[in-house]
Length: 126
Image (cartoon, rainbow, N blue to C red):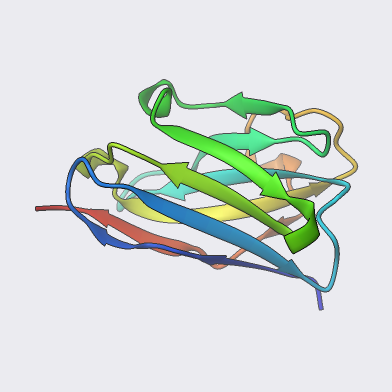
């Protein structure tokens, strides 16, 4: 069974950091574009960052530039989202998603992806 599992979420104070992990089971991530999305209460799911199969990245949100980075470790079949200087407005459920065969990141739309994980909650609050 093909599955993506996110981990690393939790409660953090403003200014703190978290590293989210997205691990695949049932398939290898080597040839997949991986995107991170987030959905805050009452809002639509939005693309955050993407990393292509070759390691190129795209940032879909101006609000996270300079604070969030994405990386991949194909040996561990895992993609990471490093989040620094977190703000209350970053509070959301974070999802990773996989798109097969993409050499480049797309526009950050959900329809571009084949699989989504179940999400991990990130809460930024004092």
